Amino acid sequence: MRRKRISSILLAGAVCVSLLSGCGSRGEETAADIPQSEALQTEAAEESRKEEAAGETPSWKKDTSPVTIDWFVAYDWYGKVFDPVNNIADKKLQTETGITVNIITGDADKLNALIVSGELPDVVTFDAVASQRLQMENAGLVLDLEELAENYAPDLNIPQSQKDWYRNEDGKWYSLVSFYYGPERCSDEFGGFLVTHNSNFVRTDLLEQIGMTMDDLHTKDGFYQALKKVKDQKLQYDGMDVIPLTGVYPVNMAQQFGAQQEDEQGNLLDIKLQPEYLEALKFYNKLYTEGLITTDEFTQDQTQRDQKVASGQVFMAQGWMTVKQPRSALYSSDPNAKMLYCGTIKTGDSGKQHYLSSINAAGWTTTMITAGAEHPDRIISLFAYLTQEEAALDEEYGSGCYDIVDGKAIRKEEAVKEYEEDYNAAYNKYNMNLSFAMDYTIIQKYENLNVENELEKDRINMERDKDASLYDDKCFSDINPMAGTDLAAIKAAIDEYWKSAEPQIIMASDEAECEKLYNQAVEQMYSMGYEELYESQNEKFHKNKEKLGIEFAWPSLQK
Image 1: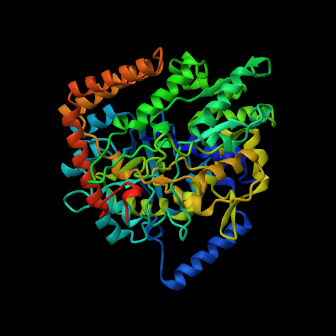
Image 2: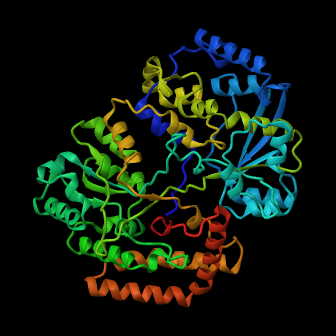
Image 3: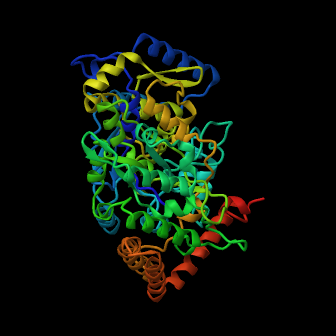
């Protein structure tokens, strides 16, 4: 399952709100008026001396004459304004590189218009999976980043596997991709790791009330029995009836039940056609017919679901994004009402080892230098600056808002009040909000595990759960047809059909009707051109494996 991407401000917010630390308050002073702390000045001076002694001046410091670059971001929700006067991170970037960034925002349609007009700005950022990436690469509209880096920025800090994964058929690498998880950094040696959003959560106070434990929730029957007890015992919280479960995701449940997505011949298996997927639909149907999930589950939006979790109405929830924000609000109002990670169901009826999908290890955005850019040498050096570990930590914690102690990033205590009093103001003052070169394995590497906040401890336990078996989803994710093609239209039609059919299958009157509706939906899918779509996806799946030099992508098939 491909996760839904979120803005960098939300990424930073989720971490900073819970850990809350950073630079001390400086009243009404602006970034331009604020000198670095003595410690930072000393550190910077020492670093400069080391660089000079070693003859290694960072690429972005070799030419700091003032230049302005135009950077188009194809997200109309992105509200970044480069402000070196009031934002310390922007001031630091401008001081170290000499570059001023002029942010231009829009959507995919505006990007298409720019491509057609031939009037592309210096830099463009958009979804890495978008068809415009290959379109621009193949049309000669963007520059080879590898060649630019060799000539002007050898310190560009990008995993080799990212370059190889996004390398065009012409042998060149054009796309700098954010939030990419490469094997060389997802290792004990470096400190990064894959993460999944396929996880279950439970209200521990209510779990205790019904006399069950988290271990009970690791089996299919135990999961069901817990939900049933909540309903049978008519649990209430704050005068409201408790909803047994929210978050209905058949793909997630099928994975927990052990669905496999590659066969022994190395061919792609569509998870919707696996027995574990039907098992998941039948399981949800059982929960629905017994009143353990409600009709609201298929009609409410994320805001409405968040409100129910935040108000304490929900006993169990599936999916990290279902609880990420609202559980903090609930905990703030009642520290005893903790919605915590409880692992996953270990397997389904087949008894097969389950493997959970990572959250889009191939990354989020692509950022490219256009062929008409006026200062490509300076832009690639800016990319080098943004890909350094220091820039990643500045992006995550706030510029100057942390110390490195024993290899871990420790937020400064004096900033806690500033972020608590007005998070947005503090974020706009210290954080760059320019995460389009972010490598989150760097953040994982430096993450402080010794935290006091109980929800933060729980997040760390979830992300670092040694019992969770994850697989790298790269080969399975980048398989869809090019936008604008007949196959893309077929896929869109099938997806839309399945989106409407799936709730009806789950809300069937009984298990027999559930299976009947599922079989009808599969037949309809084939009648819409599924077989041709599958052949194309399977072909791309094989090419993806060739790109990685592997015979099998599924963990249990790998030797």
